[in-house]
Image (cartoon, rainbow, N blue to C red; front, side, top):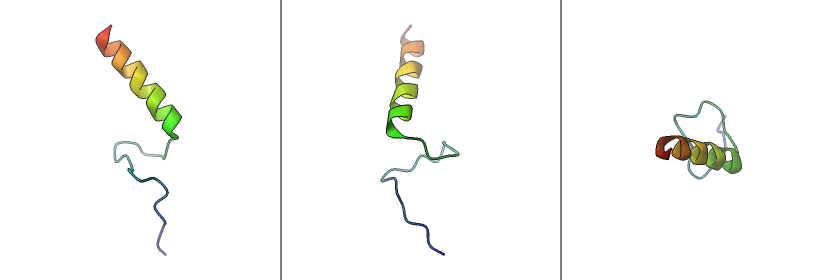
Length: 36
């Protein structure tokens, strides 16, 4: 049973596959928190 890779760049840190929008939003929030 081989699973097709839907994501071009799978995130090993993320347990479940998240949409690009969610990832981008989280990244932006984290960056803002760090910058703030």
